[in-house]
Image 1 (spheres, rainbow, N blue to C red):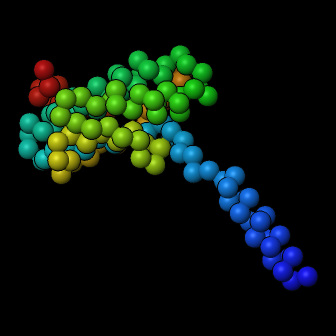
Image 2 (spheres, rainbow, N blue to C red):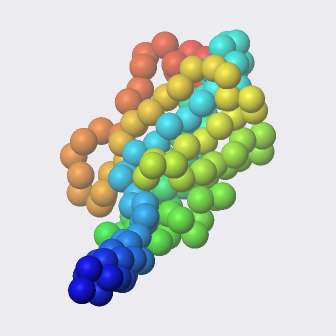
Image 3 (tube, rainbow, N blue to C red):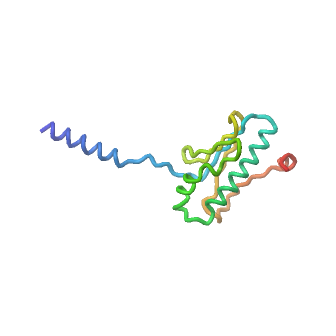
Length: 131
């Protein structure tokens, strides 16, 4: 009797574990790491961030929100420029430039084009450096 109960419990638990998935969903956020903390690399950091946001808008805007996860996973390499690598980690788009030992920029992306939350936060002084 005990063998039947234990074997049924083992079978049920193995079936339940088989049906759980470790599906990682895209949570509409990003991180970009600079290669170093030099001025040139920090300027690159902001240009890569702008590239990531532009590429995201190009790929995802005006799509059905149910397709966002799939499109991001299939096109994750599109977020990388020359000298960088893009991955999807814990639901975030992560771009590492060079050795990625410098500062980090992170933020949220729009879920649909009508979101009012600002995605591109600009600083007055950044206009002097990025041209």
